[in-house]
Amino acid sequence: MGICIGFSFHHVAADGRTFNNFIKEWASLSANSCFLINSFPSFDRSVIKDPYGLEEIFLKELWKRKSSQEMVIGTETHVDLSNMVRATFVVSSLDMERIKKRIIIKCKEKGQPLPIHLSPYVLACSFIWVCLVKVQNQIDQLENYYSEEDPNYFGFIAGGLTRLDYPVSATYFGNCVGFGRSTAIRGELKGEDGIIVAANVIGNKIKNLDKEILCGAERWILDWEVLFGSEVHIMVSGSPKLNLYETDFGWGRPKKIEDISIDRSRAISLAESRDVEGGIEVGLALPKSQMEAFTSFFFEGLKILQ
Image (cartoon, rainbow, N blue to C red; front, top):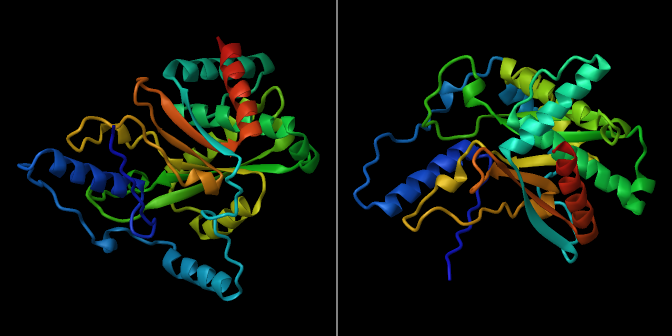
């Protein structure tokens, strides 16, 4: 017997960090009736500066698309769930070190510069992206549909509060994130150096967001539409930095955390591993045949790195 708790929230109200803080606060109150709140949430939206006039830009862009019924919704696509299966894969810290070592060796052999950002997030995402591209290559109907020159997109959300060049209270309650869309050619991703290509484009985009989170934000709506308007894309949901498994309502740590939205959004979910220190849990929802192919590529790929 066990208890399953489901949560739902809208990104207009809160980002993942804010929602996680809310859940942690709720869990602490439930676990200890004597718990005292030391800091209350801040709802002051004026603390987030808008030097580029993004509020007006976003409202105009959204209204223009809504008026012409051209808005692309990336969260509720029509997906046949009858043959869909879910699975969770763990990329351990040792796996990520091996992926990093392979990238460094390959770059040195070819006289190429190293990717500028090889964080655990970039390493895990690059490996998963390449595995999924190989799945497309193996499935006949997908292979015949896509060209080697087709662009493949990898989208993710980056926390904004820690990337601003001025301090904002950690208790800020709202949505402050950046959007990144990395692009690579399909033929390059499925090639021998696919993981280097993936690490380069993902790492470069993260570094750009680190440098100035809102730079280029006026194009985010268009970038979002290009991403979800493409049949060949991956979107990341969640983050391994939120420490979701530390949430305790008084019954102990969660046994399993699932992001159910990935069934329809064709996203992959990321969370810190519950049982493998420094590891990242990757959640996927794919048709059965594609999941079998992905499983094979995932474990064979890790085996080659040993």
